[in-house]
Structure formats: C-alpha cells, structure tokens
Image (cartoon, rainbow, N blue to C red):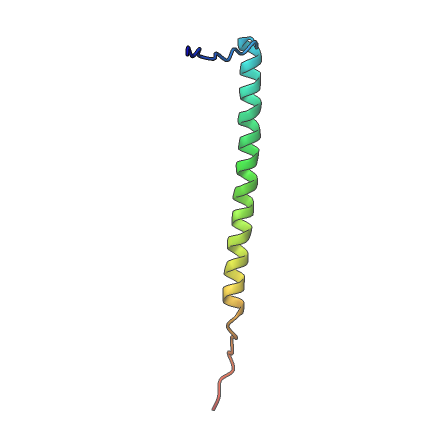
Length: 62
C-alpha cells in the first residue's frame, strides 16, 4: 500500500498574510489587556474581601 503525503497550500499572497498576521497580533494584544484588567480586578476583589473580614476597632477602653 502506497501512502502519499498531503500538502497544504495557502493561496494568499504575502501582503494578505502580513495583514492577517498583524490583525491577529492586534487582536491578541487587546485580549491580553482585557485579561490583565480582569486579573487586576480579581486581585483587588480578593484583597478587599480578605481585609473586610476583620473588624477594626479603634476605641480605647479605660
């Protein structure tokens, strides 16, 4: 039994590929910024949740 390799050819020219790759890079950069903002919000929420558990009492007793 003979096996033949398959070849994938991309029929886009270099200009189209460059535009596609630049668009993908920009989309990924935007997604990274979204994830970083979400991560920061979650860290802030975790910080506030952790320290809101403790009651702070500044009253002095005599």
